[in-house]
Image 1 (spheres, rainbow, N blue to C red):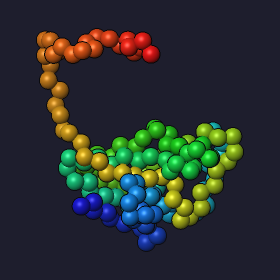
Image 2 (image 1 turned 135 degrees about the horizontal axis):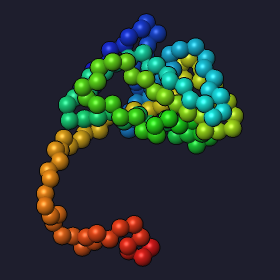
Image 3 (image 1 turned 45 degrees about the horizontal axis):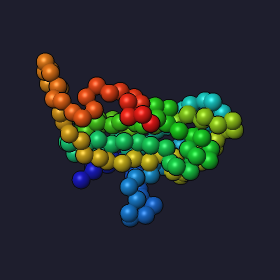
Image 4 (image 1 turned 135 degrees about the vertical axis):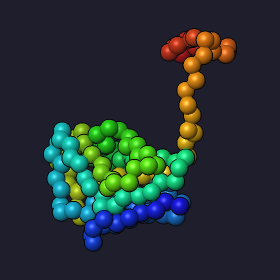
Amino acid sequence: MLQIKLLRPESKAPTRAHASDAGLDLIHIGRKLTIKAGAKTKIATGFAMSIPLGNVAKVYPRSGLGTKQELVLANLVGIIDSDYRDEVFVTMKNNGSDDVVIEKGDRFAQMTIQPIWLWSPQIVEKLPDSVRNTGGHGSTGK
């Protein structure tokens, strides 16, 4: 279960537009925001959450904003670890040539919760052989 704590009266929980959507939409809770061409801005979501251990939240741009208006995450994909409990912020960057306006209530990013393996690195003297072995980029001839 993903536990959400709303931090302000105007805060909105992440929601799906359709029951089968993979991503939960993040909603802008502040005043009208203009992101100038080439600029970036940090957007508060108004919520904190508790992600179950063994999972991670990943934040992505919404496809329409990314492809039509070139509004993307400044770090391309946001990673939120399961032990983070503070407010979720998303830094958006306008890669386009026009200003982008985000109104209060607009969905501006999307978040998925995904299982992860909590591996620990193991130092070894030799790696097991594979068909490819040390063949690097382009080693298959394509």
